[in-house]
Length: 312
Image 1 (cartoon, helix red, strand yellow):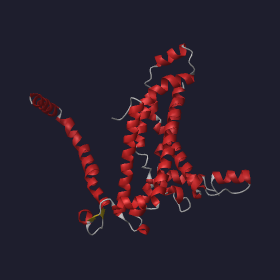
Image 2 (cartoon, rainbow, N blue to C red; image 1 turned 60 degrees about the vertical axis):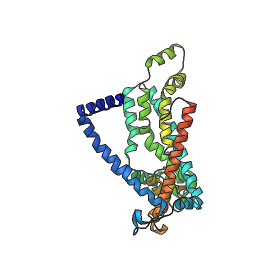
Image 3 (cartoon, helix red, strand yellow; image 1 turned 45 degrees about the horizontal axis):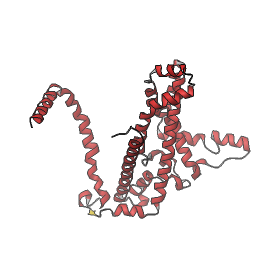
Image 4 (cartoon, one colour; image 1 turned 90 degrees about the horizontal axis):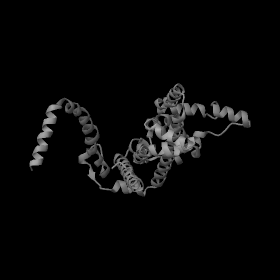
């Protein structure tokens, strides 16, 4: 009891002394409460047969009926499989390529060239998704785009429409994301490598280690904790593929592979052709969030057992 009283007094003294700093915390705290926690009350529409007339509290409670309806629907297997495969494909490339670029960048010994090259590869990150998809459609147009013109010059005939090819959707989506984001994603790895003790490289060189051996035995072990933490965090978002890009690239021809959970939620929740079933859409999105939570818990558990690095 005495210890608790002493701790409380110390805490009050600290708050009185630094009250200006705690005052600054009120704004972000209010933002989190108002825009993150309060909206969670609306999640209950996933367990109700929501109608605008009844509202959130007046609509009939149906429990897990909406979730069960989604799991039993013919769309369940397709949208979950498409989302998972696209996410794993993107996660793999968006992890490996930024790491590879950071390692190559770290080997360059020309400061001016390093600054210019990093600026160039980082700039695509600031292109909006709408502009990026527009650029892709122009460049890959089968008639007037660079892809169509070169293909026609080489083969003598026009190619098929890539955006209408279901098999091409994942590759277009993922590789365009890699081009847009690998420079930005590599920044944290480059910053981590800048903290490597140069004495380790000098010692390795004295022992006759090649550049590749120094990367393998000096740089990569230093990057390992950062890679693991970012990988665990990204696994937690593995089923949350961005809606905007997928929706912009989507058409009736590639719907077989482009229909993701995020686009499906939009269609059943807001598209008039699907009847705007808000409860069903909320249940699907909640299922997706629960799946992400399970994945991040599993990833953290595996990381803790395999290595010494984990989020908690």
